[in-house]
Length: 365
Image (cartoon, rainbow, N blue to C red):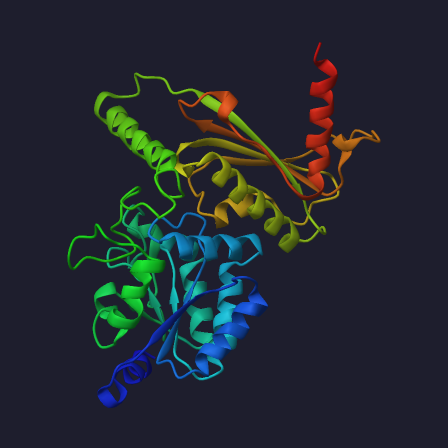
C-alpha cells in the first residue's frame, strides 16, 4: 500500500498536488461528491480528515469544517465509508486523524476497516504510535496492538518528503487550516502543539485562544501545584445538566444523540475530560437498546466514572415527561462559579428548558 502512494507522489518526477478534505463536511453525501471530483481532477493523492471534538492542532478553517461534520453526525465509521467511496475512484486516499478517535473506535478495527476501504496510509504525529504502544500515557500491556495490516502509518517527516505538498498543500494550510507557527524545526505537527500554542485569526477571544487558552493554562498550573504540594487545596465541584431525545430505541440513535449532547456541553463549557469527576446518565424507560455512557467512551472519556439509570416513570402530562429522552448530570472540578456553567437542552428536550423557564418566571416576585 505504501508503494502505491509513493509511486503516485514520485511519478514522472514532477510537481504533485495532494488535496485535503474533511469527511462529512458539510454532509457525508456532499463530501463523497467533493472527493470524487477531486479524484477526477488529476491530484496525486487525497487526505481525508476525520473530525475530532478537540482539534487543538488545527487552524480555524479545519476546526470549523470538523465542527460542521460532527454536527451532521460524522463519525469514524462514517469517515471510513467516505474514504471507501472516494478510494473506489482510483486515487490514493490517506486518512488524517488524531489518536483519540482511533483509540475510542478500537485500533485493530480501525486498521482492518481502513485497509478494506482501500485507504493506503494514515497520517499522525511522530510522537504517537498506532502499532506497538498506542499512547504514551497508556500501559503497554493494555494497549499492545497488532501491526496495521496493509495500512501504513506515516510520520510527519514522511509527509514532508517526496511530494510537492510542501509547496501546494502545507503552505496553503498554514494560511488557511493547520496553523503551526511555533513548532520546533523537524518535529511532528499533530502531537507537539501544546494547548494555546497558536491563536486563530478570530483574535484572542476566538476558538483556541483567549478565555479557553487561559483556562487550559490555569488547569495545567493547578495540576502541577497539586502534584508538587499534594491535594491540600480544595477545588469546587460544579454541576452541569443536559438533555436530548433519540429518534428511535436503537443503539445507533441513542449513541448518536448522546454524543451530540456531550459535544455541545464540552464546547459550551470548555470542558477538560480529565477534570470531569462523574457523569450520570438516565434515559426514559422507552430507551433501553444501549447504554448512553457508551457515547462518552467513544469520545475518549476512558477515565471518567460513568453510571446509567432509568428515569422515574412518573405519569404526568407535562414537559418533564418527554419521551425517548436522555439526560446527563456532570460533576466538574473547576474554580469557576456555578453561575457560569451552561446547560444544554437539545432536540425534543427543549420542552424541558421551556418548562424550567416558566417555573422560574412564576417564582419571581
